Amino acid sequence: MLSVAKRAFSRLPVLRPWMWLLFAVLFAAAYQMRALHLDDRLYYWLTTPAVSQWAPGSLLGRDYKVQVDAKVVGGVEDNLSGLSYDEQRDQLWAVLNNPEELLAMSKDGEVLARYPLSGFSDVEGVTYLGDGLLLLAEEREHGLVVVPVPERSGALFREDYRALTLGIQRDGNQGFEGVGYDRARDRLFVAKEYSPMKLYEIRGLKSSIKGNFGLEILDHEDWIRDSVFATDLSSVHFDERTGHLALLSDESKRIMELDGDSGKLIGFRTLNSDFAGLGKAIPQGEGMTFDDEGNLYIVSEPNLFYRFGRG
Image 1 (cartoon, rainbow, N blue to C red):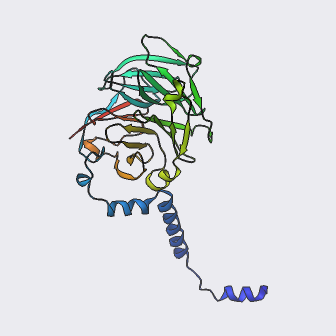
Image 2 (cartoon, helix red, strand yellow):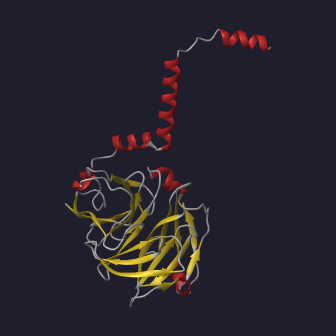
């Protein structure tokens, strides 16, 4: 039997080294194409109308112009992460981790107030819930902490506030990165960075805080599979006006816009140096939000602020 096998292999053509190298390159290219969904993106680019022809009301289907480009946030050296718009105060909220801190910011990127977060751990995300409430997301612990908007200066102590800890697939520094909230339907969207990427929908959070307990947690694995063309997720924004969900990827430098009910991909924008007149690509986008006029705000580590106005 062994001799038969040897004779069979001896009849196979001998491949030259350059052919083996070619096969290796083709295999690596095919693997990367599937791993990064390059084939899906190509199909999407070929079958989707141009941006100017997208459906009316699309968040990303309009021209943006950079208005504040890579502004260094004063008093912040590193770890700027998370961003949310508060229309009741017409300002932004951001967070720092290590050390943990909550920042109130103007729409021009100026720091208005700082609140140390005592007892919090690895805070990466923030979203405004309305009714004077903020939600802070702790990455490693998968903790979601609801805090009232501070009315005076000073530290905020975690033990003073209600929290929900999910503890789903804890894996070091690869946990909850972004949060976005649908106030009309009391839905909180939570993004897990990677290994694997996840998008959770938590229904009934705010009503549960008020005493009407009835949480429901959905894992939108199919949305990730079918509509997210990126290698990580770093921020989430739910847009009340359109009902759409915007997902930011730091590594892929991309914002993806999904239907907030079906998860269908509506469009995406790549945050390279060609986007909106940027001088350079956004280095490490960690937080993203839109205001009620559709202006886009992004913060990037270590300490950069961007604002894009609608064209």
